[in-house]
Length: 357
Image (cartoon, rainbow, N blue to C red; front, side, top):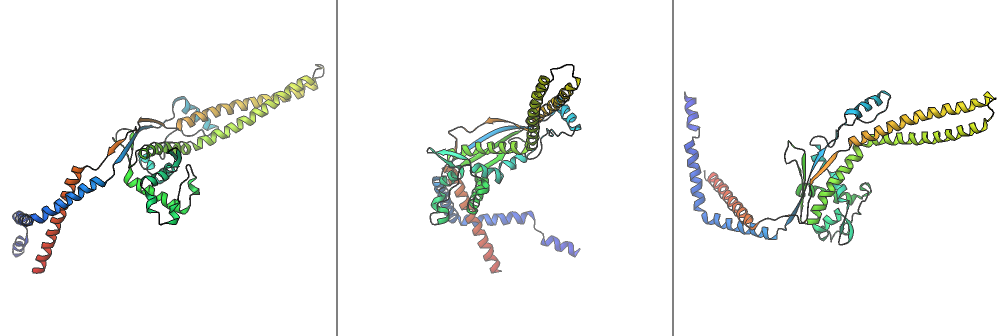
């Protein structure tokens, strides 16, 4: 009974909470001049920020990705070819572009850096997007005192593996900045296949070109990697077809020469060479026909693995201008100023009350 009574005495009721809130409210009202002054200062800082903050331009590209899948007659031919030890590819879709993997792939370091090394025409000069980004954000001004970075440039279409240690570091820092502040990859609707790529920067041309190049580089990389096995099969079969065609042409001329030499029909032994050559020719014809058939099937299989990318919306100049509004700066700055000073006053009073006990 004593334990229950002790618990009830130490418990905090709803009335106590309301009284405490009321007390703090009266305390803040007594300091209204300080709160108002800090709120005005915060509003002024927010307005100043909205005035000095440079406008940004948003480029958005929307596309639909449809993976081709094998089926029907092609699937039957592929199954038949596999029985003879011929790999024509799976014809299915998997890997990087399957599911939501593409969302991460488009903003990966590999794709962003490959895009930054692509060329863009600025003032009738071909420069890399990395150099253009450096100029847009005036990074060279910050590097004036650094002799190593002062003359740093990135050659358009340069081999990424040939970059120096310093270039690696700068590219990585630009990639982190772009991924964090400029690039947004999303699916507007999870039930649909629409993919949105947005780039927001202080330069209209950079936003537009970077968005378009990023999708182009990602698509090209996918086609190159995902069709690599099928392309290897096509190249191998093409080489075999060329070799057999050359041998078949030689046998055709050999048959013609043998027939020209064996003009005496009474000598049956002389026709043996012609029959042997004809037999070899027919064998080569059969082999050549099979290789050509498998070559065409491999090409069909490789075509099946290439995704169909349908561009729905592309960024068109002039781009949407994104600016931090004056009213937004006033309201947000004033709120933050009043909130922070109120929090400071409450903490200071709690500290004084604790020391006074």
